[in-house]
Amino acid sequence: MDQALMLREMKSGRKEEPCPATVARPQKQVRVIAVSSGKGGVGKTNIAVNLAYYLSNMKQRVLILDADTGLANVDLILGLTPRYNLYHVLKGEKSIAETIIHGPGGVMVLPASSGILEMAELSRGQKLTLLDELRYLSEGLDFLLIDTAAGIAGNVMFFNAAAKEIIIVVSSEPASLTDAYALIKVLYQRHAKKRFRLLVNMVRSTAEAKEVYKRLSQATDHFLNLTIEYLGDVLYDEKLPNAVKQQKAIGALYPQASASRSLKAIAEKICQEKPENDGAGSIEFFWEDIADIKNG
Image 1 (tube, rainbow, N blue to C red):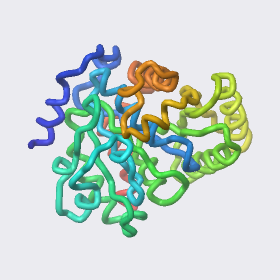
Image 2 (cartoon, rainbow, N blue to C red):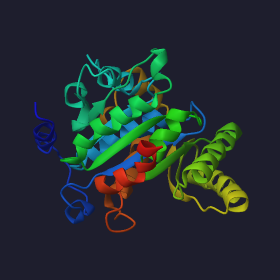
Image 3 (spheres, rainbow, N blue to C red):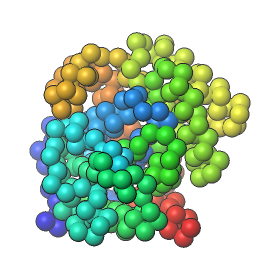
Image 4 (spheres, one colour):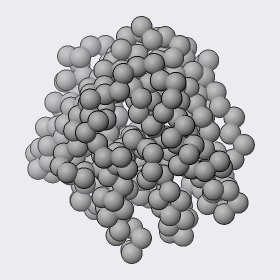
C-alpha cells in the first residue's frame, strides 16, 4: 500500500475530539519527539506507548519508532507480532511502508529487532539509510515518537539528536536521577540540545514528583546553566504491570486507572501546545537539525 495513502486512512474511526493545536498546524508538519532515559527500568517504553495511544485517540496520526534497535520491545508490550522489522529495512530487504504494523487505537508502529548484535550500534551507513527512509513519513503524520534505548550509547545520542523535542523519563530512584543528568549533560554539551522536558514516573504523589524534578533541575541549573521543564508525572499504579502482562496499553485496558488518567493528561498537554516557534518540529526543520549527522 502507498505510504501516504496508508497514513491518510488512519484518520478515520477515532472516538475523541481532535486537540485544538491540530487545526493550527500545517498539513505536512510532524512533531518529532524522543522519549528517552538515562537508566533502564523507569518505564520509558510504557510511557512512549501509552502517550502514542492517547495521541492517536485524539485524532492525531501517530507513528512510534522503536529505536532500541538491539533489544526492542514496543511490539511485545502491545502484543503485536511483526513479520518484518527495522533490521529488514536497514538490510534493504523491505521498505518502511512494508514494515509498519498497526496497534491499538490506530497507532502505527515501526518495530525494531531484538537479539541481533549488529543492530545494537548502528553504523553510519545504516543511520543514513534510516534517515532517507524516514523522509517518506513527512506526509500525513502529526507525531513521530521515538522510543530510544536507555543510557548514553551512540544509538541513543543519534535518535535524540534527530528529534526536535526530548522527553526524559525518570523515577524517584537516585540512580535514575544520576543517569538522567548524565544523558542531559552529553546531549547539551556535545549535541547542543537545550530543551529537555522531565516526566517523573511511578511516584506516589505529585508532591513527590515535584521534589524529584527540583533535585534534578537544581543540578542542571548549577552545573550546566540549563533549565529543564516539568512535563508531568505518572502515579504508581498496580494496574500498569497487569496491563504489561496482558500486552495491552493501560489506557485501552484500564481507562479509569490513576496511571491512565495521568498519561491522558500529559498527552492532552502535548497535543494542545503550540510549537515554540514557526516551523518548530516540522519535517523541514527535522532534516536541518540532523544535517550534521549526514555530513559528519
